[in-house]
Amino acid sequence: MNRIPEQRAGHGAEHDDAYYGLGWTGGQVTGPEQQSYDEFDEYDRQWQGQPQGRPLPHAQWFGAGPGQPHDTPHEHTSAPAEPYAAEQYTAEPYAGTEAGAEGADEPGYRIPPTPDAGWDMADSRRRGWVSRAVLLCVLVVQAVLSLRLANTAFQDEALALYTGHVELDHLLHGTALPDGYDRHFSGSPVLYPVLAAFVESSLGLAGARALSLVLTLGTTALLYSFTRRMFNERVALLASAMFAVTQSTIVLGNLATYDAAAGFLLAVAAWIVVRTGRAPLFAVLLAAPVAALAVAVKYGAVLYVPTLLVLAVLTAWPHHRGRSALRGLLLFLGVAALAGGWLFATGTLTAVQDTVLVQPHGIDGVTDLLKRFGAWSGLLFLTSCLGAVSYVRRGRMNESPRSLELTGPGWRWRALIGLLLCGTALIAPACQMYVGDGESLYKHVGLGLLFAAPMAGIGVSRLVGAHFRYPQLGIMLWVGMLCMGIAQSDWRFGVWPDSTHLVQALRPQVDGKGRYLSSAREVPLYYLRDRTSPGQWTSTSEISYKDPAGTVHTGKDGYRRALADGWFDIVVLDGLHTSTGEDLLIATELRSNPHYRLSATVPFKTSSGTGVYRIWTRR
Image 1 (tube, rainbow, N blue to C red):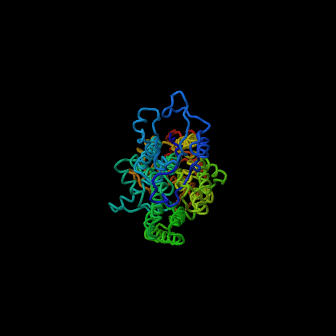
Image 2 (cartoon, rainbow, N blue to C red):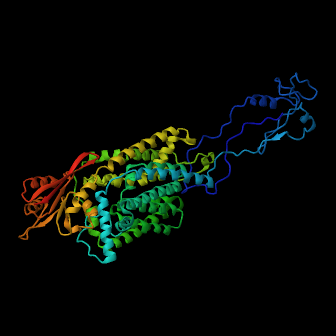
Image 3 (cartoon, helix red, strand yellow):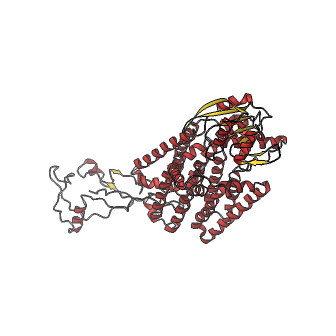
């Protein structure tokens, strides 16, 4: 009787590209194929060692041979069995049966050929659609997390939207622009602010915030795309899922600021750089306009241009080798020419110097900023470091046994790509520590996490293991990040007070002629733009007051002299902006100033507790 041997693991169809992705796909694999124990192996060895026709000392009870009673064991007296066929295995029916007697030449049934392995490294339409369906679920979760946040306009939102309306009026109606209003603006006032103001004019603040949501969802989708191109679908999905639930991603998805637009443009530039890794060297110039536009939208995005340059070199190295350095040089020249030309043509170079190159040193210490970075981004960053280390140790990303035969970039290349992506996450905190200001750290770290997320995807993939051996570890990690993202975004969206009641109290008292002093002038300026203009509002952070004698006073002395002369018609203090001492000084001066009286108090709540708006009016 012929016996069916143990089926062995192997691999099916060959992939048309040995290096799926950018040329270094391989991955988590099972061990080499192993022969499992078979209880008949001993009989086979004895049988093949016996002379032909000599019975074995063991008898089989699987059926009687011709002429033997069914209750008598038959003995093997045939010649040694020939080697098992590699193409197909057959099993004959029992010799004592009727089918065996009548059709001994034909097998009773045939076992269909079995693929060597149940998976394939080659891309497939089904795998692509399944992967996109999971990505859609990730995007839905991200959208829900962002849309659940609610508050009135933040100070940065109010500034961006009001600036956009000023620029629109100038472009459409020729209205004069206020002098120096964009000096402290961290991006070009004619790009994102104009787009956001155009949307806001039709759909309100919710529409402008929806624009940011679309941009952040696009960023996550692009992260998935270029990570899939670099590694594989599993890593791409895990990277996207981790990035989607960070505080920065959730908050920026419902905040009408230029940060979401800058992140989207950086993601587009990175996608182009990765996508053109195998193309001719000059194809990388397609990313230059996008990267330059990202810098124009948000000047701080220039800090991430070096990452794009090095990424351009590394992604082309497996295909172009030494010539890949020319690719990075071409991208650098393209971005420098376009961004530099834009800055000089629009006269915004001074704003770049004030907001990026020459910033006043703050009061936040290094330890405090490190704690914030650890709380907001630490888990994803540590996961990305774990992924980088594991990727250096083992470069294969595919579980198919056939991936054992693949070769790819060596450990030095893998170390460089891991160091680049993980190190980019440290750019924002390092710069914030240098200037001692962590006010916008929660927004800036999101740009670095965009590049660190692919390595975090590898880290989670290695934790889960081949064939999802330990899925609970990945689930625990993601749920932990989800809980942290929800709690931190809730807290972040409650940092500033709801200004609804303040605006209601101020609207009947303001007009187009008065002079007003406010702790956060951008918020009332945005909501009351139909009744006031920027020149009427002064912030408690900066003043330049000219007294009746023509002497100009600045700083604390400027506030003292302006209040002593009764120069302001209304003063609004929230008690929150006290770090530099100007608000405390103004509050003290008002209590003993005969020109002003406390006309209204408006209570509010924030994440840190309760507070009160105090509105002082001139007698």
